[in-house]
Image 1 (cartoon, one colour):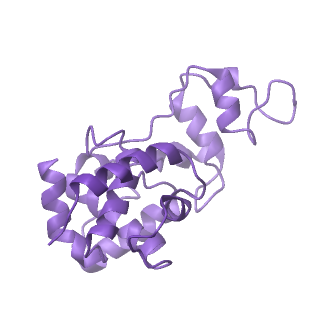
Image 2 (image 1 turned 60 degrees about the horizontal axis):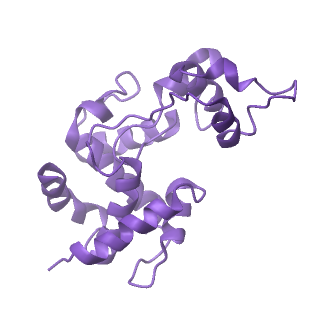
Length: 204
């Protein structure tokens, strides 16, 4: 937590997080993506043990009765196989056989996902911080390097949220979540963390 605080204090202002309202929403989203900040070195967990849950989360890909979709039982306890299926041919990722789905799975405290996002963040970082970041060939850097993990999230928050809406004390968690997640996945958890930030997070 000290590392997180120091990194936000050092870099947050560069990405438009300049008041407590923005910081509260940023932290609420990041806390959900990291399981409560148990670690800054987070990688997406795609190791499912329940076929029913897998079918419910990815209904476009799995079915127990539709022959045009996959049987979820064949993807249990296999993160690589699952990621390569559900993330294939999207946002710069190649086919299932390319391995891009698993290679560019969610990493960092905002769970940066897909090749296009890795490339765009890499380009930004190399232009503004250091030219030696190579996420396409070393995507694990988002997990092994705390500053990169946090900066990637700050960049994503600025690009996807702060560029779209003005955050103030009346901004709803749902508004921010849709911009970060695309849907309202984990909305109750995100609201719970946001409510905690209103108790503990104040900026001078």
